[in-house]
View (cartoon, one colour):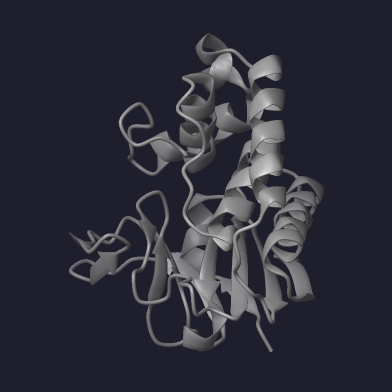
Length: 223
């Protein structure tokens, strides 16, 4: 049973929530459908937004404010959804990674929320959101090593850190071509409604099911 607890120390500093979904039995294969969906989402974004107004879109503004409160300059380290949207508006297109990652990137552009996906077989429940401990060391995707200061928010399982808010996911638990069971995480921020978070989690999990198969067995929001 996958469950999640937000630590009291985090609650005292930030009013955040987290959405999770579990998708079992995925089969990652490239298809023309996902290419078509990417094109449609990119064209819709270009018709809806301009590069000059991105920073003032409500959800992106909320994420930027959250970054500042965490001590991170969002003009240097952008929220993931903002970075993806900017790529599209600069005609660079969405990056292609894998059907699972491409699917939640599509959802990120549509909802402007930020997601992670993990190989569920590498995770030991329960999950928790807590403050880091000074001196903790992590290896992020891309073999990026980082020593934590005690101020970062981290998502963990019973044994290890899975994600450092803002900075990225751990290499150890990332989805790969051999992943069959996926844990999707949606990061709620101060000012975001639980309904908005739930809808975004559903949107991303449906995209994963559509383009990578599998069965959605869990969708929950934790506050």
